Image (tube, rainbow over all chains, first blue to last red; front, side, top):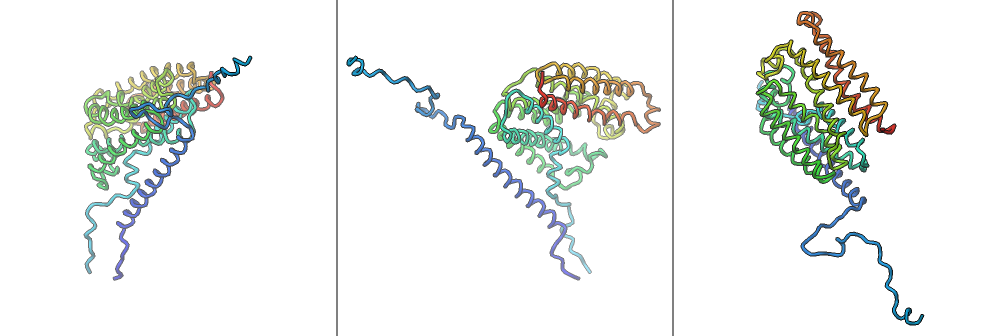
Length: 75
Length: 305
């Protein structure tokens, strides 16, 4: 009798292992792509962490430059 | 000559058995309706985020399917239609199905929260809870109205899709809910009419078993009448339009006609032609829902009102 190393059971196990591997790799790729999309959308990336930071303030229009007192005096 | 048969106890599961645990056919309905809900919402979503959102809504639906198979494995073992499912056939242990269901529930809710927003994620969590606990554990074995209320679980996906885009609920998403909600009872009761003895053997209080088949026929017709106004109302909201309305009018006329034919049939006539009308209306109900959502997509493409 030929000794058969490959049992039908091994095929089932392989299908489970390969399937799980594909799912996990797919999940990693998905999270990475998700990260890229989220970063490109450019929403707030930092959260408040107990002290105010400039980077958390809402973006504002740059204020008009203050009038130069020396120029005013000259006029 | 002796063979070694040490491995011949229980058949071991392969990957497809775990996929079957997630009820892929139910998932396809969830994918489609959730996608339509998300796509026709008035807020644009990045296509990849939309893909991810629908994927995790579907995964949540699959997780609740696994929890359903975990709890209902005793019923599934009795009914012909479900005997070959992974648990009754012995390929997957009950505890394993519970673990898969709980793990995927947590994962899908968390990922949907990260992909879309936490309102949609909570909505998904509620849907899983509703299907697995309210329907499967509480209602299914207790009341013949089980599928009426359980139908709500299947009606949530387009609302979740809509919530992914808009972050809230509105009349359009509520009407999409109503469309599936009132569609479910005639759909399942038509199935119950021609799957005759299965539910009886399993001890599930289907309307056909508890109140008789005549009452079930009346209920089917009544629900097709209740369903029609919600379907048409959706046509007058911001997602509706002439195309959708035309499709809805035709489909509702056909469905009400089907309900009427079921109502007017005697048991003898039905048995005589092996439930041909009931089977036809069951198929029609599948087309009805699919074409409604397809019409919503088409209307969105053409431009709604």
